[in-house]
Amino acid sequence: MPDSRLAKQLAFLMEADALKGVLRQSPIADGSRRENSAEHSWHLALFAMTLAADHPEVNPSRAIAMLLLHDLVEIDAGDNPFHGTVDAAKQAQAEARAADRLFGLLPNDLRDQYLALWQEFEASESRDAQFAKALDRLQPLLLNTTNAGGTWNENHVTQDQVHTRYGPVIERGSPDWWAHAKALVAEHFGPTKNGTRP
Image (cartoon, rainbow, N blue to C red; front, top):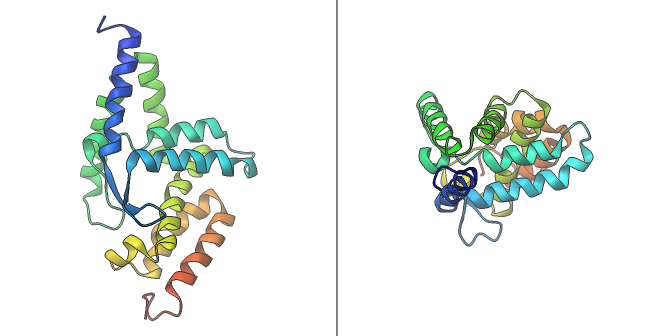
């Protein structure tokens, strides 16, 4: 029964397994290897479960759903390195096509639900999406500070660039998170000259 509801659900779930093969730039906390996008999504869902208790304005189930779905498009569109140079418009188009294909594997009701959650995360206008998007910035920042700079060193990222690229999104999700993260960033970079390590 290839067109049954269950067959469509299982086809989507098996397609989602490909996210385990998409490598990110961020190292895992022990520095032994790079994380994959499926691990990143799981870790973010755990961040949301753990930190949502202090944010009663957030619906944790919706935030977790967004975080589990947000990077599935990388199966087709690839990971967009945060510190790389990429045509944002072309990447957005590729990700939208990927969302249509991947969520299109599902029965129509789930397709519409998942696509709407993915689009909400991308737009980052709702409180749930802002919370989720902030975690998507906070987690790699923590991995980089845990790994003595990690990908920041590889990409010659300055302290000012960290503040610009991570700060506004994290702070919009939680000023407390950004205050904590900013202190870790300052500790990592230490005394600076033009925002770079001496």
